[in-house]
Image 1 (spheres, rainbow, N blue to C red):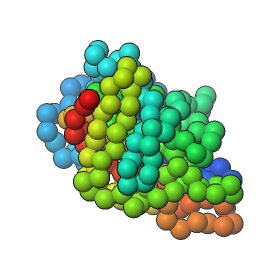
Image 2: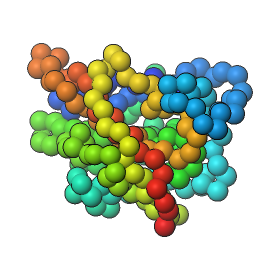
Image 3: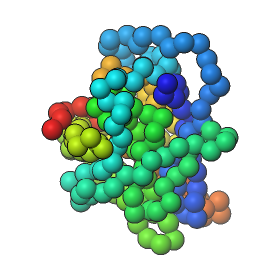
Image 4: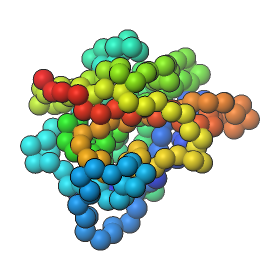
Length: 204
């Protein structure tokens, strides 16, 4: 069963950062989510994975506006404390394997670095995406899932919209996450997250 709910916090890595997630202890059996509800009202219980997509993984990322083309995706898991282990390179993003497989019901979560002492990361210009922009996530079975951006927000770390990002959704959705906002030089960390939300457009 996929992760029911993730609590997002910011992980700083020598001036670069991605979103970290902490998984909750096992809870009661998941309940079916309403067909259509406002995001703020989502029950924090993830839907069951869809059998047709369960054997696939997210492997590539295309974001034309950011000039990202067929970039490989790493697989992101969590450590013993339940915190997301970020990509080892700032040049690639990673798919959180506890989130939905691209194209299945639920949010597919992809996180990447904004920058580091080495220079800009793959999501350096993530905040320049606009509603209507297209993002394509390729799967290991050769299917490409295309999403259309609906929202781009910058939120303080301490006000991260956990339910909207990781909670159940009526259909396939996508979240792209990185750091943003002001940089705290003393702590060497960004104070905000950039969160891009997108909905399913089509598959090929």
